[in-house]
Length: 475
Image (cartoon, rainbow, N blue to C red; front, side):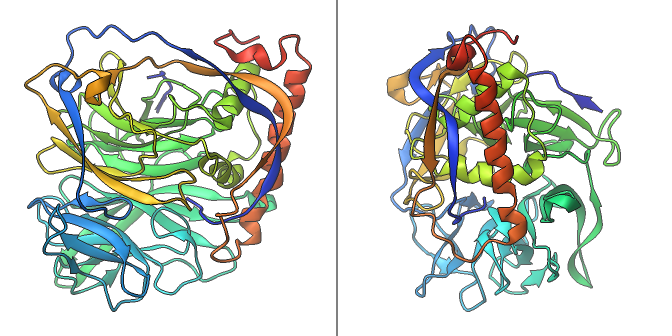
């Protein structure tokens, strides 16, 4: 059942012609009126810079320590555990083939740590952040008993397992699997997988592995589970359920509860159809809000193209294959920035939480549900500087802060105007290849370029041209 109610492949060089570019004019929606705000939505939110910078996607242990991935002495990414201030730091995977990244402690029991690794395989990207060659592993909290849970095929079509998440009871895992095929064979296949985590005398392993959700022709990234274990959040780029060309929106897939099973999940759109880049997500503990990252207050060419596509009713062919090139074009834009936002699920009111003007990737709550941890990245997210690490805290005893206090409500409608200029858009030279991308991945680039040119051509045939999309109704 699908409810459409509105609510990383690094290091590849490419060049394409972008006919629509963002002008300086942006229409900002008025701040919403928040009636009877829930405790988290009304709480103040403060952000502090941590004295130690961890790698991307640091996460908490149940006892308040931090799991992180950082380079070892030879420059290979490894998994570390330490106090928040960096003291008592120990490397858990040093001496093992790497890179090893994206560590997540098993909830409730805290007896296993999930992490991602290439282990010397053919690779592109970064383990669990997108690319190919990643498998899921677990190890004990002291780094012992390292066990591989998945196995990418060594055949001609690259594969990847990325962005996993534990269920709240630690008994299930969900993640996204990628299978790269040539366009005539259907292009890239994104599949959401659900598995039971078994820990018995036979050792840790996955069982009952199955695909969940419809077979979308789209880009997909799985996010975190709901605190009650009923399902999980995920991001979808493209697909017939969305409005506008490759517009990333946040969804919730309910697997358990009335009318929902893993075989027949109930999927609901949460975000509001904004042409912004919406990704990463977590529920607050009371499940009244979702926190996610968005580029809606920092418009770039991505918003321009999506806005035009929404207005034209344009859907790109084979978005599953186009998503890779789209990702490069979006995140390597020097203007690409994201912030954290909170949505009240009962009213759809949106509140902006951060004002750093950087890029907020993965973030995680501590076990109390009151502190968020993340490491920002600079412009050109996949090749830019890492840091600083931030700790965001909710203070539910006081009213929401003002912009000067790092938090304030914000409007949700951002529609950049368009200027049809035939401008050249080139990826940063910092995006040098780690390894030659497979031809299955490269094949998506001309499709993306052709789709963008189709949008530009359609705009040129309209009287309003590039000024079509400042909140105008569809033709």
